[in-house]
Image 1 (tube, helix red, strand yellow):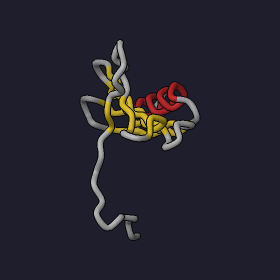
Image 2 (cartoon, rainbow, N blue to C red; image 1 turned 45 degrees about the vertical axis):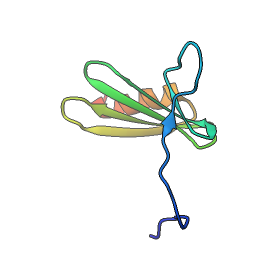
Image 3 (cartoon, rainbow, N blue to C red; image 1 turned 120 degrees about the vertical axis):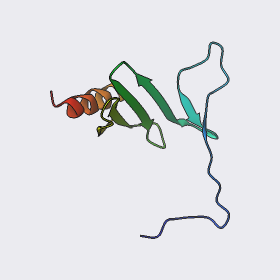
Image 4 (cartoon, rainbow, N blue to C red; image 1 turned 60 degrees about the horizontal axis):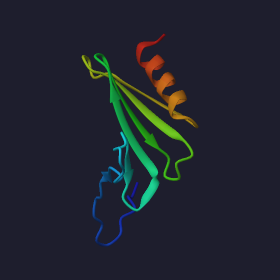
Length: 91
């Protein structure tokens, strides 16, 4: 598979929007609908990534001790979080 690359491609980063109070999510520079959020507790790390247009979510759940992962996709951040977490721990 050939990767689509412009002649002089550069990587960019997600940035925190400049708001008061600060938000707990990041957004793609130039595309605020494309967001990223990371949250954790003592055992699990959840990485939430919105679709490019912000209309769906992918969540990656990581067990902090073993680094096992599961991935879920759905229309809502809470739905993907629950699904990825449940798959990770097979509830």
